[in-house]
Length: 322
Image 1 (cartoon, helix red, strand yellow):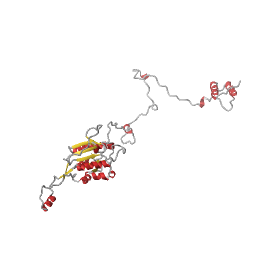
Image 2 (cartoon, rainbow, N blue to C red):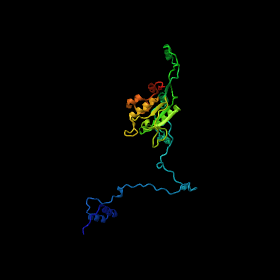
Image 3 (cartoon, one colour):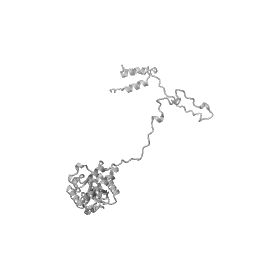
Image 4 (spheres, rainbow, N blue to C red):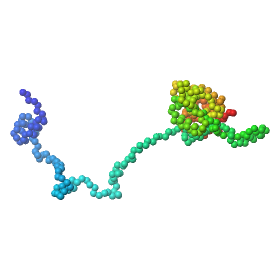
């Protein structure tokens, strides 16, 4: 029968179980045909002794066995003592990390979340002045116009009434038309703020909403299936204020999008009724149609708009034909 291969682990186990100097170890050498490998177990002098930690003492402390000082634990040697601070550091010592300096305490996390302020298109500080300049009409109720009176008398004409200088006024009222179409959704917050500012400016405000163009219908309540009633111009001298993009933005294929011809027809109808039209447009001037800029007063609804800019465009107020 053929002998199987003997592994190195089996050889090592045989050498450990036998004594190094016995005859059986020599026979094992010949049986395993070991020539170059020394199977002798090293002597105890070649192996350094292993130092084990001392076993913990199970003796009770002196506090547990009162009146028996012989059972009290012995004082530890300086080598076995843990590190202890011999003296507190002085103030002039540098580089000593105090515990409260090594890890600074972080402030508690605040639960209050600050909501960022919304920047409106019209600056709040200049909003009242801009609206007053844009929505005022001209009334000849100011001081006496001396040059005009002298000119009339110099031509030997009678003074039927004393000529007076024009002053701006808001007593004729305002009709506020607000575009609630898809194109004005990005400006919903600014639109609401401007409507509130106009209501604070004048108590005589007739608020109406529309889609596309006011000529299609405008109303103050909810839009029913039949739509809002037909728009009619207000009394003569009432300023018509539009908060709309004039179809300059929004979906191009939307049915709400009005053509410039509709806006021109609306402006012509308002002019015949003696009502000036002012439109606050949230787009830059280069996008305005020239025909609409000539038919009505367009005010840029933007942070760069100032009261002086509007006053130069309107003057001392909109002229109302008698």
